[in-house]
Length: 89
Image (cartoon, rainbow, N blue to C red; front, top):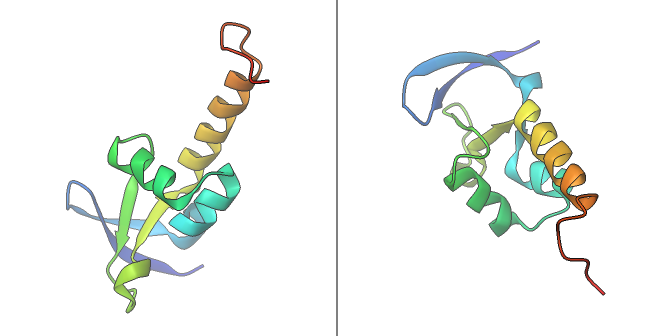
């Protein structure tokens, strides 16, 4: 297991195992949403963002926690079955 130093939004260094994180592209695919929708979730604080300072490619430095993605997926799936929401035709 490799560990690397990352910076959380509050910009305090923490140690996170790489197996706890996924890229934004992978997270968008897992949730079945577009990349821009995912970045909106990150900006609104629905998903915690971690910046990998060891990544040489600056466009791939942002990661999100897998646990946050799974929680969002579970929330979205439970809303599909909510009878209070309008049904799409």
